[in-house]
Length: 330
Image 1 (tube, rainbow, N blue to C red):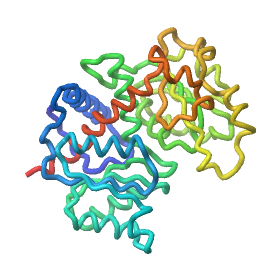
Image 2: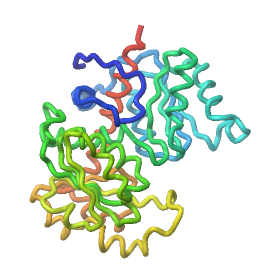
Image 3: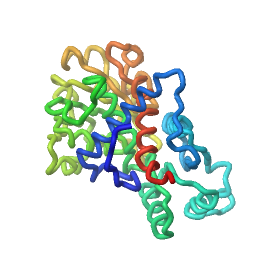
């Protein structure tokens, strides 16, 4: 593993991540990606530690990726599902966290539909004076740090497989298209991509992209632009990320129809003609085929990095668990 002066105890948000921290994550993930290419994919880095995946909200990619990452690091894993837990009997979130603490948990990976829950658990662990780290696996409409970091890693390793680093995205044009209002992924990606010096363009209908997002890009190396039409965002773009319409989080009818949305904002081969010839397409998943992206484009390896993102997720989450967990090894 690369040498590091990593001091961050919890990973809750990317808003205050430093360029050095981004590069440390990218370089460490690169090392673990090499490990994952070997016949023996397991390393003893976190042997004896316990990683608890506390998912109070359904998940496929993130939960499975964190579980596999922990096992590849030789940690013991505990998986929580609220539907079959004592929370159905009235137990509170903090009491649930304390139960896992009493079982010897070293790292808690927390996902919740309400913003701020991972922060509250982290504050409680700090108040108790224990050395338990909390990693935000997605909280409400707040952030999803590990997803944004794996997106960053996916792009940087495409540009330089041997030495992924932040500087590679300087002056690159990245478009994020879709339900930005309800997307925790978009919020974390805004922090990470504007930290690189990239030119970041957000595109969505006005109901899904309020003007308040313009404040996210202030005083950062990258430039942030908002568009309520698709074409300016795609023009000469190097990368296009499309987001799922999160209808479960919409409190009102913000779109006329899915069919109309696809016609105007759905990513298709014909619309990609506005982009650079070697443009690549990303999506954090899960995907609504034929809504935010055409099915044939999603499966085309010439353009799509979607499966690469899933693969990158294991290496990046190994890196994050290693960085916050290695200091606990005695």
